[in-house]
Image 1 (cartoon, rainbow, N blue to C red):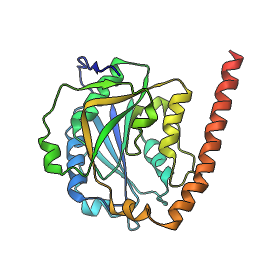
Image 2: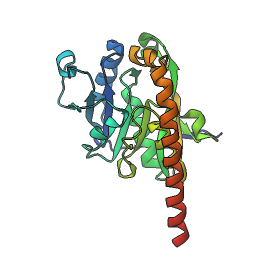
Image 3: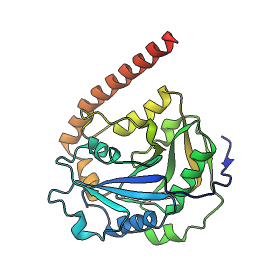
Length: 249
């Protein structure tokens, strides 16, 4: 698996929108750090917060900046990310979680990769689970590069997707909680788009208390099974449409 350096990507321009769904059950210092990093990042034009708290309290607990826009959907289903994506006007998007510590430099590097290789449709990144924020901040920064994993699914994440806005397709509302991330990756695979992985840098992932609780409930296991059937049918339907389209050419 070869490592590809990122060449110069000047001039910078504000061409990335960050979308972050939240129910504010994440470590506050982690979320604050990431918001500050993206606010100060040269290529980030806007940060769209999808406020899924029952009482819509994000703007009461966090300081808003000119870059931050808050969306308050009526439901907090998995497909609510569509509400944020509908508002994007930039060339690129980054969907991430509120429990992920991510330095702004990573968005900058993903922008450089996309500018360098137009065949790349999606970029993901390595995680270190539970790494203390102080250690993450002190991590020595290396020259950043990228790679193409032999099996993109091996590096699939549900908490970091950097892509091209023109290639985004909404997550079906039938996938209420699960498999939306899998579908994003499958769409890239079936449309013959490259999936890259950022090398020599990472994010620190801290599971929110809501995720830790949800992963151990009977309702969760039932939803995984039910939505798994829906997801697999969606992939089959997509593959059929693409094959029919290609057969006409």
